[in-house]
Image 1 (cartoon, rainbow, N blue to C red):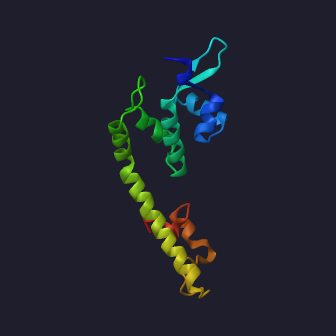
Image 2: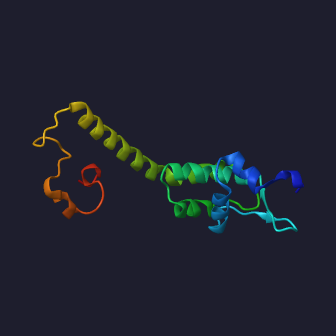
Image 3: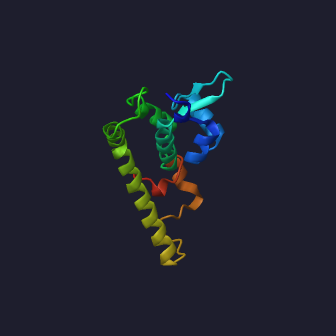
Length: 148
C-alpha cells in the first residue's frame, strides 16, 4: 500500500466531518482501525471514510454504537466493503429504522394536533397529565410512546 493511500487522523476527520477525538474513540471501540507510522502516528485506509460515514449517519439516527459494532462484525477488515456488504448491513437496520420512523410520524402528528388546535383545554388535551398520574406507567414521554 502506498503512503498516499493512507490518511492522517486530521485528514480523515476533515473528510468525514468529525473530531479527531471521535476517531480515536471509534478506534478504541474497534469500529475502525489504523496503521501506525514509525513515529506512532495513526494512518487510516481510505475505506475508513465509508465506515466513519456510516457511524456518523447511525449516530444521527440514534442507532447506538454497540449496534453499529455488531453490524460491522460482518464487514471485511482486509478490503473495502462491497455494495453487497453494505446492503446486508442496511437490511439488518431496516426494521429498527421503520419503527423509529413510525414513532417520529406519531410524534409529529401529535405535536401538529396540539400546536394547531389552539384549544388550550385541560379537559380535552391528550397531553394533559394532572398530578403526574402517568408517572406510574414508567419513565419517558408516555403519551407519545406506541405502547400507550
